[in-house]
Image (cartoon, rainbow over all chains, first blue to last red; front, top):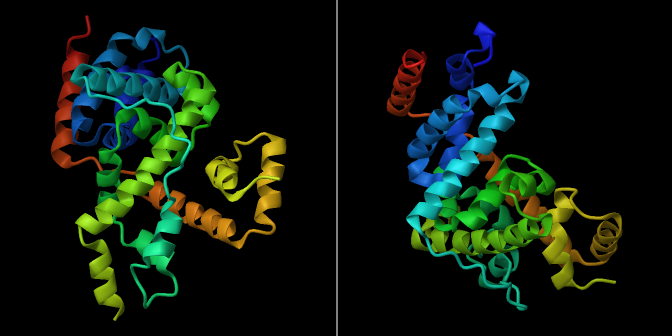
Length: 193
Length: 79
């Protein structure tokens, strides 16, 4: 354990807890509490390896991501890592143009996005396989660089870019299906009349 | 010169400033004449904002209590 009592594990961990849970909620969905608990136990055991408390956020982030990946591995969820199809998915932007779900709106794309609550966004994220969800969260929600995420996940940067590309396609596709299944578009169409 | 498919493929990396200079120039050149892809970029920016707005989850009180209890236990187990 480090000698600085002001920097005891308990104090540092309590400071990190809100954003750790927030990150876990996005990478592990409704298993967030299990992942945070595992993370705290692992971090406690390894606390002697944290030499600089300023590095605590990055240190906890790495441990939490490892915990989430281990949990997904144990669940043995089948992961589709087949090469990207040469034919890209239709983008959500173009799909909204083609389907025109809100014919009375002049700001249909923005209206579509704003129909999603934070809970809806998490629910869409939950639909993605972890291999795509984790890079998406780290890069586009946490603001990490693809180079840092590659180091964190122990894979080449090109692999991260490939997962991100496919993850975004899947996220956009799931957004459309979620909006349809949960009547978000019907609610919007009713509100605009 | 790149086409729409290639521009769309790179536009998120473009937004994240994660492209090599040559690739960035190619995307910018394409956007200079393609209104559809400009719409794609604006939409991707909005979508990214929606994702970022959902980035912070509140810790439920019961979860915070259990995590606090766990930290207390770990602290007490310290030799």
